[in-house]
Amino acid sequence: MKIIVVGCGKVGISIIEQLSLEKHDVTVIDFKADIVTDISNRFDVMGYVGNGASAATLSEAGASETELLIAVTDSDEINLLCCLFAKKAGIKSTIARVRDPRYSEEVSFIKEELGLSLILNPDYDAAREIARLMRFPSADKIDTFAKGRVELLKFEVLEGSLLEGKSLIEIGKIVSTEVLICAVSRGDEVIIPNGVFRLEKGDMINVIASSQAARVFCKKIGVETHQVKDCIIAGGGRTAFYLAQQLLLSGVAVKIIESDRARCESLAEQLPKATVICGDATNQEILLEEGIEQAEGFVSLTGMEAAAKSHCYMRRCHKPGDTP
Image (tube, rainbow, N blue to C red):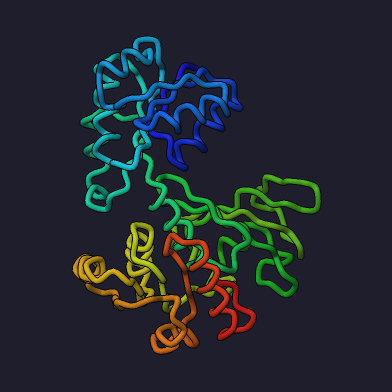
């Protein structure tokens, strides 16, 4: 497949690397000549220096023969404009990275009006994954389908569990909620169970349900979900905003520590139910003052790896045994 990738940042490079490994015919476009040269030398791709939101640049890059365009620059607006021009140039499928929370409630409208095949939001996806883990930390694995409306959870049947020795028909009568045990792993064997199939100790069961039904199911069979009741988030960027938004909807108390005052004011306005603290989250005294010793959840999202390691180290020091 002939593919054009606009934007050669971290996300762009990851996409280019994967597409190159899959032997696609890839062309990359970026403003910076040194980056385009480096990527062209590292991967088997064609490189063009220029504006991906320009019809002339897209034409020069071979838009008329291209089947897919992926726009992942650091500007949402440029990404959308790239896709708009790509459609005009005859490219059938377009994908845009759109991260700004201001567009989050208009994604469906934007996608439909511009004819986009997909909108990517890595910040939102990362936040959604963290939020899922905080809702069901006892689950071995959690996946989502239907845009997050349906979840696939994986649990082990423990000795003495309400599920042990019971058939799926019996379990259905006990839990009386809409869940589906769709697969069971028993040793090296994967079984698609029917109603008379009986669960045994050590079985790994895969359960499909809505978020609400999954919580009800876990409660009725005696599996503690261990959902956190409160969470401290270090950093107030896009991922922190999306995470706080999702945790608040789940009834989790959220406290955000951010050093930029203007960003704090913006977060306080957008998330009125969250507590926003203007301060340096690497300062141990601030963390202690804001209750890190009592907090059930802690997430470091400052965007700096060194700061994240420092946060996690302090967290371990004050709550031995926890995994931040």
